[in-house]
Image 1: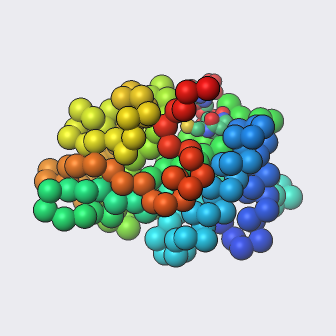
Image 2 (image 1 turned 180 degrees about the horizontal axis):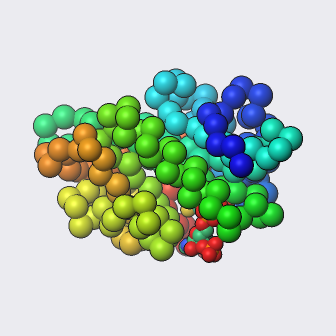
Length: 182
Ligand SMILES: CC(C)(COP(=O)(O)OP(=O)(O)OC[C@H]1O[C@@H](n2cnc3c(N)ncnc32)[C@H](O)[C@@H]1OP(=O)(O)O)[C@@H](O)C(=O)NCCC(=O)NCCS
């Protein structure tokens, strides 16, 4: 299956991928998050990749967008991975892994120092993500479980780059940070 950069005409299909993959109200929220992140970032600042089926329709999507690391000496632009999703019939074939690897390669080439995410360590450790708190980073919310707050340090990372991750506004506006009591 082909992995390529998102095109303007993919936006609706990408929304469908997230609505179906995450399901229910959360799926709608994630699709809105993607639209908001797209609208609030320049194309050159983000990495948005799709996996397309034979009919050219996206069946998987990954998005990396810029956020800030509040380091002691200055703010550092880092990237946050959110979301990644693959439609159910296309899962377990390595599509998410390919989307992730391509995205991370591209960020390393763009000299991004670090990538953060919230997610299950079991899936992301294969890409080199490690618990961020153990590397001198503070999570942006106490509602993120420690083990879910992960970082991948890329070749441009330097040891002084520690501190608190500051999510961009779209994550707060859509209330997708951490876990809420139900
Ligand atoms: C997570 C997801 C993107 C994986 O897509 P995929 O194309 O099936 O992924 P790959 O084939 O590259 O890798 C699959 C492996 O990832 C791991 N994995 C998948 N979902 C996982 C989860 N929720 N927790 C831990 N590991 C997981 C398993 O080891 C799985 O191996 P298996 O195929 O032998 O079961 C897909 O299941 C999905 O869209 N889920 C709903 C949305 C979601 O939860 N996104 C991630 C948010 S953090």
